[in-house]
Image (cartoon, rainbow, N blue to C red; front, top):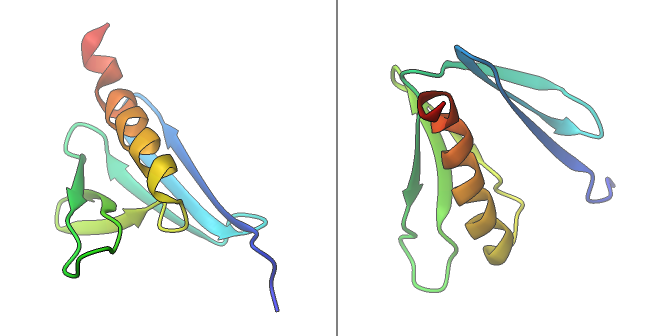
Length: 90
């Protein structure tokens, strides 16, 4: 049985967003073109379930922070959106 050791690293480069997921280390990696990537929220189908955060680009979609609690998801949502668009605000 694994302890709660999920890890998710999101790296924002000038032209790419790289997401790495795994347990204690990176086991899977996804790349998205930053200029086409969008962060969006899916509302839950059932009342009381948490909202879900996704990144999407060119038909590829990936949930982000699925293991976070509601408060941490709210904080992460704002931070990730700001990071995605930060290069346009320079």
